[in-house]
Length: 134
Image 1: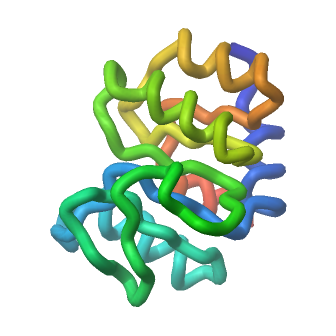
Image 2: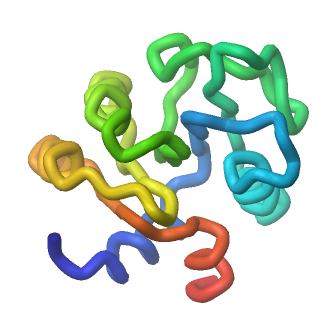
């Protein structure tokens, strides 16, 4: 996959509404503290977790298709093998980009997202990259 630096900068600059798939209710997990950090820096976080009703002051949704408003970015905290259907849903809802957190890599899903015109970031922590580029 090509260099991600330009994609990261563009996503951080342009994507303001972020659906977080795999949002965790546990503050000690990255699936909680990374979106919390991002929210504190002016981004809108929409939690996606079928076991939650709300988080970080926002209504939570069971899946991406249930979100009733446009989403710019889908930030993913799921195992690598669970990524393809999330990318499919991101394409279906018209998201501009998908971001697979640090340690998450799925080349097939990444290529599908790129082919559909999405920005794609893999194996990078959004919080770390935000600190680096903003």
